[in-house]
Length: 164
Image (cartoon, rainbow, N blue to C red):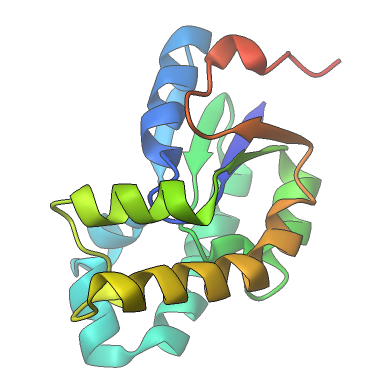
């Protein structure tokens, strides 16, 4: 069994994924950490040096490598499901769970974060809000294809029924 957690950055994919994996006795994989271990670059540094297109190509390779894993919860990057047919891959290889949050909830988390994301570097609060709103509008049609949509404010592992 594979669960893929999708949603916008700051929606809590890794936090929820770890909790779901622990409760189900599964392995947890954060796609960004897998990328960083494999290529020995932080996502931010890779973005800065090689650009988003190069990152998305390698990110897709990392996603496809999860097809050989079993009994795993995978937290994807915020843009992962929206590139290179990745949502089709996710839907075909596991149970997709979208952690849905509003623009204002995501903005609040982004402004509190001590880990600024590459796509938000150097932006003031108004620009961050505008970017979140624009990207969420672009990305949500991909996210909404997930098998399950959970309120990202406080999702619980119990909200995810075993497929069957």
